[in-house]
Image (spheres, helix red, strand yellow):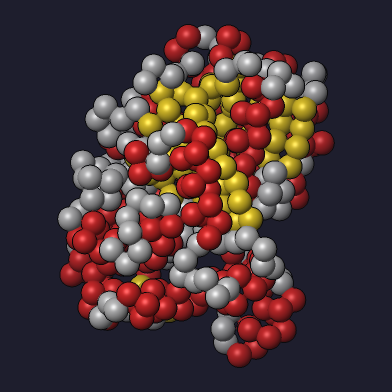
Length: 388
C-alpha cells in the first residue's frame, strides 16, 4: 500500500472583510499549497472538496481548466461543510493509499465577512426553521448553542457563575492562543473579568463565545510519499473516521434528545481508537471545531478527553492554552483565528507537526487530532509525524 502524506498546505489567511470574492482566496490558497509541496498544477490528478458551499463558489469543473490540470483521474465531493472539509482530506488519503491518484488537492473558502449571511442564512433556508422556528424568534445557531449551554448546566448541576467560568475559560484560552499567531483575525487579549463584563449576545453566550465572520481559504495537498521531496514527507493521516447520526439536519440542534451529547462524535473517537490502538486523548494537540465556546466543551467530553460534566476543572487550570495540559485550537480557532469552518484547523495541525508553527508551536508535539461537526455528522483526523 502506498503511504500518503500531507505534502502541501496553503492559506489565504482570514480577515474580517477583504472585499474580495471567495474565488480569489481559493486560488491564492491553492497556489500556496502547490508551492509548499513543490509540485505544479499539472502534477495534480485528484480533486476533492466538501459538498455544499464550495461547488457553488468554485466547482471542480471550473477549477480544472483554470489551473491547467491535465491528468485528472479522481474527483469527488465529500459531505457538507465542516465535517465535509475533514472528510475531503480523509478521502484524499484513501485515494492516494489505494493508488487511484498521486497528488490529491482539497480546498475550501468563504467570503462571509464581505458577502452573504453566514451560517444563519444556511439554517434560515431550511423549511422547518424558516416556517416554524424563525417566526417565533428561535432562529440561528447562536440561540441553538445558547440553549445547549443552558441544558449542559442543568444536566451537570452547574450554577450560572460556574457555567460562566467554564465558557469564559474557553474563550480566554482561544484569545491567548490567537495572540501568538501572526495571522489570527482577533489578536486582542481577554481576561475572565473582561469576559464577564461583556453583554449577553444570546444568554448565556456573550460575544466572545461566538465565532467570527471571515473571508479566507485553505488548500491541503495529500500525496504519495515517494512523489514529494523528503522535507514534505513528515506528516501522515494515521487514522480517520466519519459518522452521521440518523436525524434530519434541520432538526438536530433543536430536536435531538441526545443534546448536549454528540453520539456521532463519540462514535468517531471509538473508531479511531480501534484503528489506531490509541485514544484521541493521546494526541499532543487538539484542533476542534469551536463555532461556540460550548462546542469545545461538549467535544472534549464526547471524544473522551474529559469525562461528562467535568471539563470545568480542566479549563480553570488553563489546560487549553499553549503550554497547558491539553493545548486546544492553538491558532485561536473559530473564536479568534477566523471562521473557515475548520479548514484552518487542519493547516494548523500540519504546521504543528512539521514544527514550523512559529509563535503557536507546542514543543515536541508528534501527533494531533482535528475534529469537525459538531452535530449530526462528525469527522475526525488523527495526524502523526512519520518519524514518531
